[in-house]
Image (tube, rainbow, N blue to C red; front, side, top):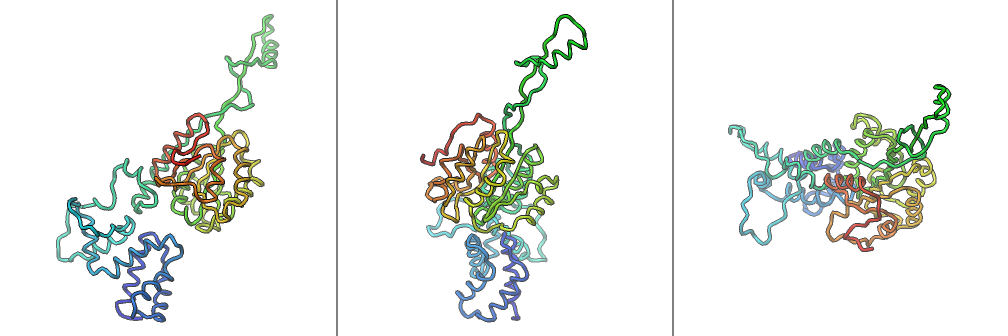
Length: 397
């Protein structure tokens, strides 16, 4: 295929790749070969041919659809993209205005708009960045991970690296020397009297030691949780390198222990090792099967000494909740607290209708949202408080 069409398909693939879709050179070549078979006489055939080659998951379709309509059907695409950089004046608007493109798509199309400027014009000295990103830290903390641009994601990762998990200390069975301790240490008292040879024996005392309980994290890495789980891995890396006894497991269709990989100080190296170790990234979700494997193989090793468990998942189980209720009950009885973080709670009208959510909800101590940095800060506050039964206010018991 020759002419401008092959070049335009390549540029369209670059836009999709900049917006976050995994479109490489091999898919561009496959798309050109597919177009030679289907032809370009009909617009629908052209649309679905590129979709069949470029898309891997259902979640990518909306971004592809908007990018296709802007790139191929709108003759004034560059003018509209440049208009996004200008301040908006709110007044009487047209009743049927199309919704603005996503931030990632606008960011992907921005370099093309800048290249379309005339080369003989003098470059502007004022940089306008009012439409795509806002550098306010408070606004960034409240932005959903799913709607963040690439630049905002980079800033969010830096903020996440500074977060800490203030889990309160609990008393253990081990004793330590304490002059004001409630217990008398008879052995230490006798040894002290033999050394000094005094007639009066000074009593040595001791008390129970206090230590942070282990933290066990079960993170869902299925297709519906892909973007959130990647951000949570940065959060878990910061926690793992900040304190001891943090155990991290990821699950999709199987359970994988990534604790050893996250202990590397460099976050990029750690996540590279995680990517190599996990084989079911962005696949299906089998929560019940994964919990059964955890309860059989790992619970006795990592849930000792009043461990706190964080479960990060949307509760959409591929097996329709089979054996999930029994495994959740066993997990809940084996730990000190079980906290469920669900990104779906960002919606005001969330209801526990899926079978997996209904099976899991009765066996958790706290049901919290987890979709932005602010929700992670709220999680730290919830962990620092006293343990108690709690449910999300929007979820009926």
